[in-house]
Every structure is written in structure tokens, then in C-alpha cells.
Picture 1 (cartoon, one colour):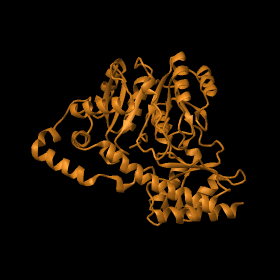
Picture 2 (cartoon, one colour):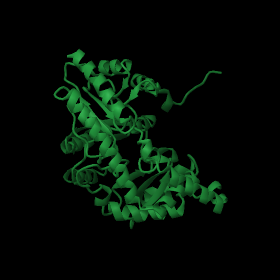
Picture 3 (tube, one colour):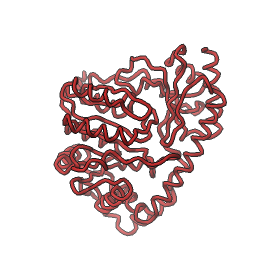
Picture 4 (tube, rainbow, N blue to C red):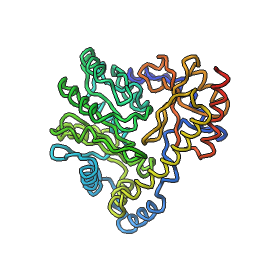
Length: 396
């Protein structure tokens, strides 16, 4: 049988960069490449108790089909929590529970983007989103970043010069991969520019609860007074556990009606038992206490990573100390070839992510790489950084 693939998928090819990352599954390799939360933060006992109770009290509710919009008690808890903690106004908005925030990215793209339309993204940005956008044959335009977020002048120029720009995808808090926090002034600027040109903002906030220093900054969605200009994505993957695959999308009522239809054609509804677990967790326990636990774990891990970088790579590799999230964006001296460095690192037993994996054009020159501090142990962090330091030293 000869398969004839769709035009959308025929252009999708395995990335050489991603093939390199497969090596990180080797247990002998210290993985700084993952985006996984620390497993010690999973509230396993509480999840087990909720699951047992739910199956004992009402197993049919856990195992039967449910409504596409999401388990009603979970939606109610999310509306309360997002309004209280994130200032998101639901008077003009609705909420859809999705199979992870990744599905939210896919549904928004499916509803808004035709082949050849433009999607604007930060440069660099989350490679999972890039792959989704590519699968719809969108025209991708990367917008340069500064220390406090996207370059607003470049954003406006990109909108003006692009064919039918549909939305700007932004991770304003502890950006993946750079860790950058977009300032309040720039969040306001993003909203103002996009509103002026009729371009939606797709705000992804998977790491917002993982702040380890500094003060919170208002979400862009909370600045959206009419509810029509910003679509907001959130997830329980970093808050509770990624395998639950529970995320959520907040959008204007008109757009939400289309998103629900799009979800019905994809998976009908998200996992009912997982939604019940999330709803009961928010109801039974103080989520702020749990968030404080997460922050303490990541504060310690980030400290170990930064201390190791300062000790073994100080003055040779540039980075910004993270205020939250899971990643550190490291930049090599220009005379060191970054792809070669990453390949040598894997051979030596440490996996990092090449920076150009997060670019619209993976062939573009990049001197940076991303490391993750949430997954490895403290000793692995120290050992891994020492190995990277030897490679840098041998490359200079």
C-alpha cells in the first residue's frame, strides 16, 4: 500500500534537532532538555484519595461521557480562581476545559487560521506551539525579544508587513525557553498594538504559578476590558501533574462557541475523571499552600543550577537568573558553534536543547541553548554543569 499524505502533513518532517533530543531518554544521560515538572511536586496521596472517593461515590460520573465545555464544578472553580488570583473578568468570556493547554493552541489555530495566514510569535518561543502552527501551513513570523519582553516596534512592523496576521502568540510570564518576564508596560503595549490592527493576542500562561522571586505582573487577559482581544490558556500540568492532561481556554463568548464545536470534532470532551480530580483538589485544599510548596522546590533547584553555572561557567556563558518557571537560557561565546556544542554535550552525557529549535527558522544562527532545572537531581545538576564547562573550555 502506498500512502498519500495530506498536503499539511507532507511538509512536516522529523527535525534533526529533535532527533538529537531522543538521546536524552538514555538513563545514563543527564537530561537538562526536558520540560517536565519535578515529580516530587506531584500530590500523589491527595490525587489517590480523590480518585478513590470519586469512584466509590459516583463511578458513572467518572466514566461516562460528559459535556464538551468541561465538568461544570471544575469550570465554576476555575472561574472563581482565575477571577480572584488573575483578575480575569468573565462577564464577556467563557471557559473551555481542554486536553492540556496544547489542545487549546490547536483549537484556536483551527478556528482562526487558514493556510497562508500569518501567526506572530516571540523569537524564541515554545516549539510545541510552533509545530502546531506549522501543521496548519501558517506563515510564521518571529518577533525579536528584549530583556523585558518583545520589541514593540518590531511587533508593530511585523503586523504591518505580514499577510493577514491572525494572532500574536505570547508567553509573557517565565517564557519558554528564555525565562523572560514581559513587563507590565510591554503587556499594555502588546494589547494596544494588536487591538489597533485587529490582531488577537493568544496568551499562554503555563508557568505563572511557579514564581520564586519578584512580584507578580498582571496577565494580559486581565487588561482586556471587553474580553474580545485576548485568548488565555492555562493548565494543570505544572500545578498538579501533566499526565492528567487538563488545561483550559478563556475566550470571548462568540469565539468560544466555535472552539467548542472544534473540540467536539477532536475528542468530544476532556477526561472526566481527571477533571473531577482537578475540581476536587481546588475545592478540598488550599491551592495557595500547594503553590507555595511548588515555589519552594523550584527556588531550591534554580539556586543549585545558578550556583553551578556561576562556579563552573562564570564569565564564559551568559544567562539571566530566573524569577520562576523551569528553564534557563544560556548564551555561548560567539566563537563556539552552538549545534556542535550541543552534540558534544550529548556525547559526554548531558542533553540540552539547541536554541534554534525554538526559532521559526531552525537554520538561523543561534548562540544559545536551554537548560531545565526541575527534572534532574541536585547532584545531576552539578555534575552536568561541570561536563558542560569542560566542553566550553575545550572549545575556546
